[in-house]
Image (cartoon, rainbow, N blue to C red; front, top):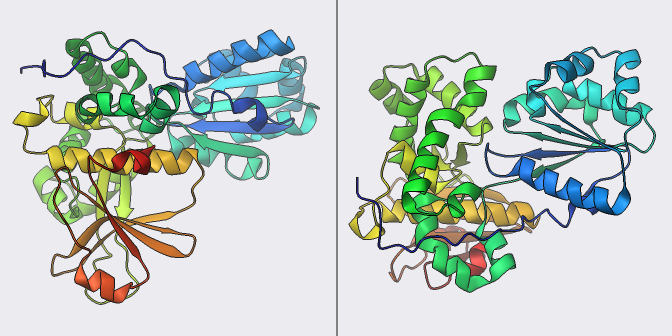
Amino acid sequence: MLLPLALHDSQNYSIERFYQDKLDDLLRPNRVVVIYGPRRVGKTTLIHKFLTQRQTKTQEKIFTGNGDDAELQQVLQSRKFSQIIPFFENYDLIFIDEAQMIDNIGLALKIIVDQIPGIRVIVTGSSSFSLSNKLGEPLVGRQRILKLFSISALEIKNNEGYFQVIQELDNMLIFGSYPEVMTACNFAEKQIYLQQIRDSYLYKDILQLENIRNSRKILDLLQLIAYQIGQEVSLHELGKQLGMSKNTVAKYLDLLEKAFVLINVRGFSRNLRKEITKTSRYYFYDNGVRNAVINNFNLLSSRDDVGQLWENFLFMERLKKRSYQEIGANYYFWRTYDQQEIDLVEERGGKLYGYEFKWGKNKVKAPKIWKKTYSQAEFTVINKQNFLEFVG
């Protein structure tokens, strides 16, 4: 397959992540900072850089460990004060990477933050379904949860300005924005890295933690979803194509959500009979992963799915912005049975905001039923001319 040589190679620049200069303030005595996110988006790099800078300033004694470590697992899974407290009591700060690999991690962390005065704790995890279940109730009132994504347009803008976002746009639509993809020397390296993500990391948590052995079926499911960006997904139809039950499809989709591969969006309705609410749309956390799943890294000029790439990109970049800037909002798509639709509806501050995503300069008006039913709602078309403020 030809690589898109007409695109410019990404510069080897280092993007400072959104939380880099905020972790000092977020890290409180006898509290746990939990950082979730997809594999390979830079959680470990972020924390190691932060800890190196902090230790230089404070001379604190810092413990760093990994959830895969058998000795660490044995101590934390014991739930014994006599083992856990002596192991950690001489440290000022504890960092545990891939904490979802440790059973009863929530109970162990509760013991640590309740029994060791002044201790600060950071844990990371790449699968929300595992780590959230294990932290859950034991750390109620004791944790601050953050999400880290692949590099965002917001972070690029904060580091280098809006012009760099425009410069990187085609690359991000095709190759996504994993840190190692953004800084790869050439397009062949980007493609190879994304194929490794697809084959080695994408399903790791699901296969390890849920005892699912047939990764081929998961990839087949993802390929079908990849071709349906911006469309409602029928679990029944997916099951027919995959030779699986509707319930099994639903289970796999749920796991892919919790492993930060896909995100589910439901339909919006205020009980208007014509509105569709019982189906979902799915987006990929990263465009590059989506394109790796269908093995298509062609130039935008030779593709027939640019509209889908644009919609996936805008949805996720908006999600990143809302998450990082703590813009509270419920999000939906909106469609009626007579095909009137809006790609994204945000419900925030007691008001509705409708956004339609268009790659070209198409002049689009708000659907008549939308205007009639939600007369106080706003409606905006997001295109290449005005997307920067929307995502950055």
